[in-house]
Length: 358
Ligand code: NAI
Image (cartoon, rainbow, N blue to C red; front, side):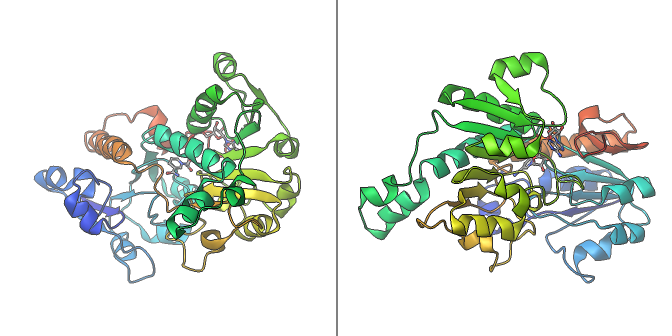
């Protein structure tokens, strides 16, 4: 059996830090185990274009392992060529880089390691909200420059206490974000999701559901995006929706870059309509050097908390998703049923509702 894994390069860091399991160097700790059973493992970060390792080996691989952090984009066209492919495993959470409708058409299963990095992301969301609201980055940059002018940063620094914070998507991550916000004494916590939270969950976080998205964003000082990317959420936060945001609101997106329109967000930051944007996910990854989200600033010279896609790939998360990937492969190899929460596309098609199949 040929297993193809598209992972990110770890370089020196991965050679020095073996817990960087999700890298091409450390290979999710799968090589010895797979080769010991006579399987072939191809691992690479080379994923773009017809001559890439990804496109060359996808034609006869039976198993594809990918990661959202360096996504091997399995398009419908590539899926046509993948004649031997039976199962795609996402080492992490979020399988939007796989054409899911094509997977259904070709009877290819898609699994991910559900829950493996939800705490990692929720913590990053809280950090991102705080660094925007408190205007942390320009303050730190001032110190690095050797300057000291408190008023220049304090003029755009606020407390999170007393603000209205809302999440688009209140699933595993969105709910954990709400839980972590409770001690901050926000004015109100809101959520927008297809489905209401279970009663005990809604009570625990004391969050109010708003069913209309425009109404939802118009009430929030901070919006955090925690829903999957699918046909219904691509470009959801666009120029039109941004008009309904409160002037000076902060937006945090650690879900998927393409949920927010690249140029509309950059324009809203530039004009100050959004006071800040923060997150780790980009519409294309790696993000090109000229991507406006790298450089955008609000009129006061701050409001940008962008980082590379790493919130869900902490060392703790890598241990969990490497273990989960192996367990999915073990089930596949021994024909055992998969954990239901990991199944995005099962043998009978869509098995999760989070991807918009409602
Ligand atoms: P989940 O499946 O537990 O929750 C997603 C929630 O979004 C569900 O409650 C669903 O009903 C809701 N939803 C779906 N479409 C919606 C829409 N159009 N409007 C409002 N709500 C909608 O997923 P989980 O674990 O919370 O992850 C969410 C997303 O976060 C993943 O799909 C992935 O894209 C992203 N993620 C990012 C990571 C990172 O490193 N930045 C790591 C892990 C996940």
